[in-house]
Image (cartoon, rainbow over all chains, first blue to last red; front, side, top):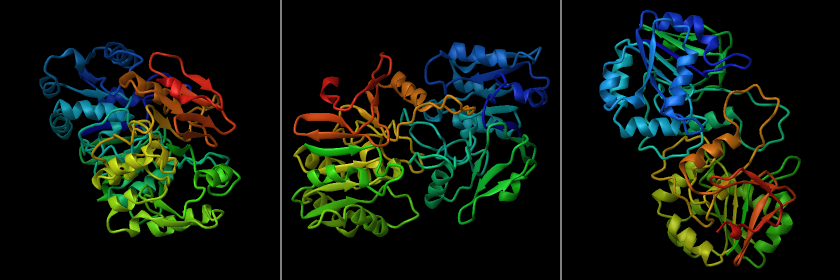
Length: 235
Length: 235
């Protein structure tokens, strides 16, 4: 495999995809075309406008064209013949619903497993886990299943946030929510802070970026893992 | 109807249900027994322990017994014969899944519509809307449907939080999430801040508590509504 699974497209004080630029030059090296999946976008901008945003964010890739999946008549064929794929963020429920309803999970999974360069950010990363059950998103539509690509043998919680010790709010913290997930499920969860990503290259699957991530394993205390942590040790 | 649909069970600096005490004395006036639905609890404590917490929170009701729904063999009959019902908070997906799988939505809806005193807090309030699609909870289990009781002809967003102008976080604000819901759905949403509740008495349906709520109507700008706002004006 050859994938980048990022917590966020954008970090504070920087433009869209900017912090990932050196990594993306390597990931997409030699690609003439990248297929952009804009389906997570829940409104505000059209699929066309969202694809334009991706084009601008990737404009440093000089000889690479970005094409939106929505412009194809046959989505499955577009995925099957893609040289590289980028799934943008938005709402994970909306993205998952469309991937299921168009039967796109299997072709997308097969391409990623065969080593096609893949970039996911936020919702596009959530779908790389076993299920979308640890998304932060609001369930604005009902997908036929919470099953995801299962490229990783754990779940992702993107935009991971540490508890605010000064908060007076009574909603659950992110950690509480993930521990509740683990009470009912046996899938480990990786809380990826903004600025972190998972880099899969061949059989290697490592935490990248400057920050630690938070690892949640059933029946164990949550723990911090440092950059270059090897996710294959999760078994 | 005779219901209290509250944003939260607990406000900062106060004990479980304490801020609602004067209201609950009126709602449950004369009730010998209250059926407690503990099914939203996603672990940490058992249904028995959660029911004990509800008992303690309602201990100011001197001649009233609190009984957990989990102690009954036949849940439907327990609901049908209940004098009053309180559904506690926790995870809305988990609560909704169990209500659907045990076919409890219809009997619960019928009892509430017939005027049985009902208290919902957080997840127990979310289920009073048309769907649970505006919950803040993590989708830790997959319910057979997002449809809810539909006691209200709008959706609830409990624990409503205003955007933090100083945040550097790239996750969506609550308002953004609700506006994304409205891009894809025609159901109005009421963002209930902690300390607010909706009081239904007969044909009256009013915002209560000291705070404003935030009202989201499709194709309109979100607006603040003041205590005593009449939700029946939503049509």
